[in-house]
Amino acid sequence: MFSKILIANRGEIAVRIIRACKEMGIATVAVYSEPDRETLHVALADESYCIGAGPAEDSYLNEDRILAAAEVSGAQAIHPGYGFLSENAHFARACRANGIVFIGPDAESMERISDKTEMKRVIAETRLRPIPGTGVLPDVAAALEAAAEIGYPVMLKARSGGGGRGIRELRCPEELEQAFPLAVAECAAAFGDGAVYLEKYVWPARHIEMQILSDETGQVVSLGERDCSIQRRHQKLIEESPSPAVSPEQRRRLMDDVADAVRTIGYVGVGTLEFLLDQEGHFWFMEMNVRLQVEHPVTEMLTGVDLVKWQIRAAAGVALRFHQEDIALRGAAIECRINAQSPGRLRMLHAPGGPKVRFDTYLVQGVEISPYYDSLLGKLIVCATTREEAVRKMRAALCELVIDGIPTNIEEQLRIVSDERFMSGSYDLTLLGQT
Image 1 (cartoon, rainbow, N blue to C red):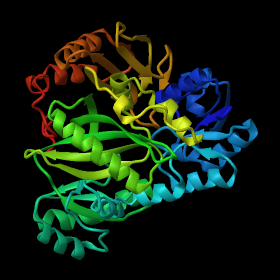
Image 2 (cartoon, rainbow, N blue to C red):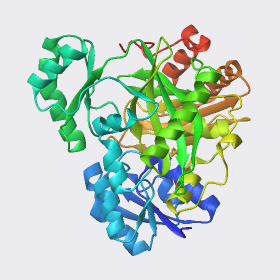
Image 3 (tube, rainbow, N blue to C red):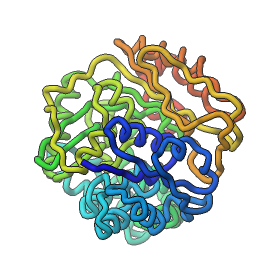
Image 4 (cartoon, rainbow, N blue to C red):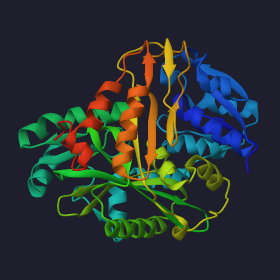
């Protein structure tokens, strides 16, 4: 097991990883940008190093400075969290070249899985069904020809990256012709890869993802699904587990099929397979994420499995100490992402409490919210015996959460969880007007 880990991230996920390391007896190293000098993850780490100015390319995306901090500190491994360098095969390869363990998949696995078109080809050889679509499209003419064959509406998507960037829903050739060069440019700027492809737009649908954990012995455990259908502009706002749209029989079958597919791929570590669930009850595979998901606490609350600790253990070659039959999904868990609506300085924070209420955040009184990074302030997670009870608990927790000095989406989240469609569990991706 590692004795010291560098956390190549910031915000709530850096705090989450540091806490897991402390519980495991592992020393921690924080890296930070100038605007983050006074933030919580810097205070909690055993040692810390400034790696640059505010813009991410000068700090949290600067591979050389992060590796230098790891070398100076004597860190044996780097945990990338999510975002930033978490899916960067070049960085994973650079870690290995410098004798440092990258806590995540190896570079070769990352490259293979991050190529979404290649991944769909591999998945087609398993019991899972990929969404009908194309390979990488060389130009707009090829895209128009393929769209005519697939049938509108279609989705234009990036081969690399995620977070909703580059995605376009297109309903006619004119829209595709206009959107193609814009999507290519956006993907090239965001991911360094302008390759795009088309897939059939499954609508109406729900966004379902399955969490897995695997080790070097080939053991794969499915930890249940999360419903991520509450989205705006392809950005998730609320996640819950189990999904009210998935029956116990569907769940068992999907868990088995996903585990078999992951064994076929030969993946090791924490991963998530994402699907669209159509109205006929068919699961259509979209992609696999090879990192910790923002919404991982939902699964942790429901299963009792600490995903961050097991991600670290898997990277250290430790075999899983439990099997599929040991996993029990008891009750219901819901997560609301609390986002800043503009920069500001936190004057007061009151986090809700009570049994099975958790607020993962990096906020401390007086902290300045920087304009350089994403807007996530924290994640409010609740767990209860039934979904109805979990919804009530979430409403109560949102009413108790106070973040003064920074405009947030707390009121919006309260409206969503009070919406009759959400309370009944009958929502899909169109709930917030996303069609």
